[in-house]
Structures are given as structure tokens and as C-alpha cells.
Length: 139
Image 1 (cartoon, rainbow, N blue to C red):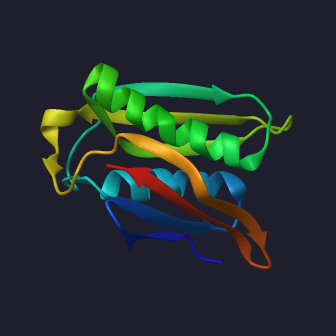
Image 2: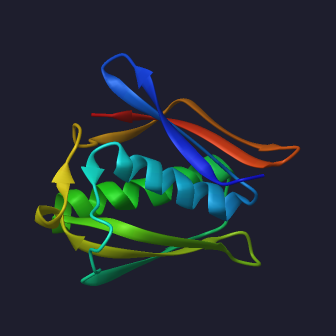
């Protein structure tokens, strides 16, 4: 299975869909989709900071939302946006992630900024070819 994402039309919100061979890669791809929904990242931009995350083991939907909510935290509390993301699933089922970030002012806005991640209509599933998730984002 290849890794990828797309942004789906949705009334007053956006929906992102991501897919990848592993759960961790699917979560990372969902982060990339979330960022692509509101920002254009220049190809030659250099990260100026890092933001590590550790999520304890738990249901897949909670770990997915936990990582996506870290993007919202960075936007709201630190005026930073991740431009690169690495997610690894730990042996105990937790997730470790590192976001490489830049100031929000360094990217071009291309859509409405995300306000919240919704559990409504959230789907994350293991498929015959890997993992797939669909998430609604309040904007």
C-alpha cells in the first residue's frame, strides 16, 4: 500500500483522509493532510524548532486525535506549524512523534485554520493493505 492523503469536501468543516502501510505512517500522513488543508509549505524551508510528543498506549482513534491535537496546540499556543513529522509506534503500543516546526508566519495560508478535531464520524481501520483514517476538522 502506498502512503497518501486527500482533503474531502464537507459542510462548514473539512474532512481529511489518509492511508499508509502502518498505523504510525497513517497518523503521520493525517498530520500532513491537516497541514495541507490550511498552509502551503515552501519546498526549501528549513525547520527552526522541534516538538516531541509521547502518547501512551490506547485506542487507535485516541492516539490519532492526540497527535492531530498537538498540531492545533502548536498553532494556538506557539504560533508554529509542523513542516515535517515522524511518528513511531512503540513496542508498548504508545506513539512517539517529532514535529519539525517553523513560525506560522513563514508559511502561506491556503485555507481556514483548524479549530478542533472532531470524534464525530471519525474512522480509523486496518485494511487488507494497511491503515486508513478519515477525520473531520472544525475550521
